[in-house]
View 1 (cartoon, rainbow, N blue to C red):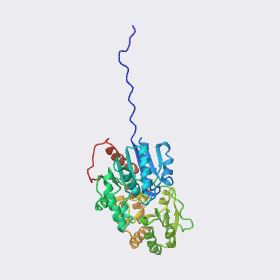
View 2 (view 1 turned 90 degrees about the vertical axis):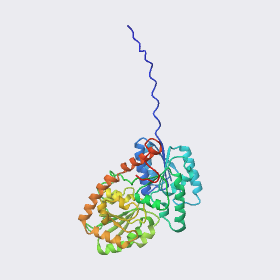
View 3 (view 1 turned 120 degrees about the horizontal axis):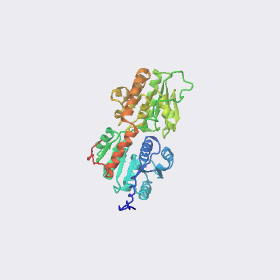
View 4 (view 1 turned 45 degrees about the horizontal axis):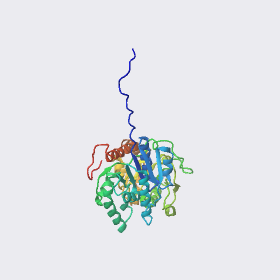
Length: 394
């Protein structure tokens, strides 16, 4: 007997919802901010988000994102580093990018993108602002006052402010910047930055000659001028020591003019990991930071570091190692003493390097930072329980 199935045919399943579209905006295309954006965009695209990045068309950031293919779409946005007569045009162009992209959420990185994005959006799209060090720390006098006033006012147009250290958050609070804030420490790629082959950075140097490396943009913020003033003392006490500055920037010529014996300029490089591995000590004497990436990268390579005690420095270090690694900012004598002490004690350097690698693996892996940012996004987009109150941190 013929049987028929009396059940109604199943309705087709509804199409899966489109993944949220995220628009990152960054004016810096080189340095630490650019590397943070690359790591975040890479992780988010791999997790299935629809990721767009608006940034100037030349530099490390658009080049690195280009190799991701269809995973991340790069949108050219021409903008200068500092506010100026072109701000109106930059803001208008950014508004057009946002309108054309229709993102579910905008994530603005550093001061200039935070300025233009918040002026363009004024809160009509969920907006995350990540200062990567406050704008008012980079200037003085009336300019610093105006920058503080702007940050206080513009906080109302940021759905969430993301700081990279508790110290950065506290600096904003002292300046009167209020609003909902999350603290998400910076992370680095611990597979790329790991112990391994070192660069042959010592041609012509005596066998075993100690090497100090400073990686960073050659500019006032990073304090290479302080390091060069300290180096006369270091070279007098450890005559065979060499210092290599890796990077380029606006202070290149001035720094070269004041550099003494034993100092070399390596320029910019696409891969700094071999320089970290070659170093006996990595130094970054910054005048201000949020939480610098270069020390975390060096520590991931199991190298000891010496840092000026600015925002984020203490939080990036194992607590037991701060006595050896931290010096007051703008203090060449203290910096020289710390470098000499480490250059004369190989066992201490090795112990600090081992602890540094473990610390970064546990607290500063880029995957950990990306997961924390994802939690913020999900909350702001209504897909996660609300966990934050006005002015709280994570």
